[in-house]
Length: 246
Image 1 (cartoon, rainbow, N blue to C red):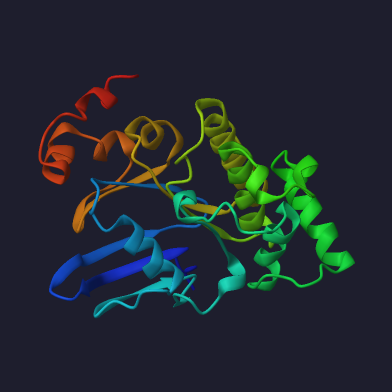
Image 2 (cartoon, rainbow, N blue to C red; image 1 turned 45 degrees about the vertical axis):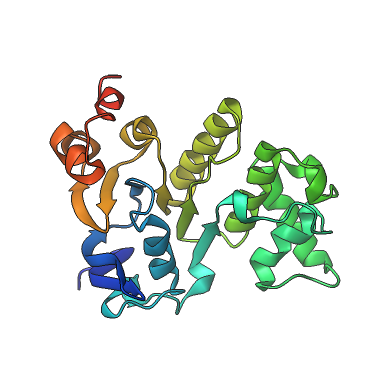
């Protein structure tokens, strides 16, 4: 029997009120692939991630992870949200944030086995020295590492990232992609990442989904990141410069 894809989306259509945010989205992503989701603001990229997480139910169609309905196996998923939605004044430590990846809630008290697993995850992303630091004291790059540790603490089979480079500097962004690629190499995990950077999509992803409410292109970066496909999705050719780097 054929192994089901890591992520299967079939005819997924999502409406918020009168607005159709996603229209008949269909694609299969096999285990071990690195998918970059690109498209203009308002294209439905974050909504697609929420469909994969099971947080948004399509009005038509469906999504599945490893052959099971989206949302039914949270233990197999790691998730890194957009940092700009985070309240930096929330009184919590890096350790406590990572432990929420184990408990799915904020811990009143961290148990010794949880501390051990959280410390190992922080060490994996080069941030074990941050374990006792308050979140409010962390830089954008440091906070991103802690969020990544939270996503990886369960050793998930699939990692979903919503614009993870937002608010971090160039070196932190470079480290982020290196960490993801190393984790993927060690575990054969599947990565799904929203990004606005077409160069990142070209050079780090094995598959690219060009989205603007519907699928404008899906496949190998060299095939999908074409001037015609991007013009259809973005409405202009101002992004064509990103294709000339190699």
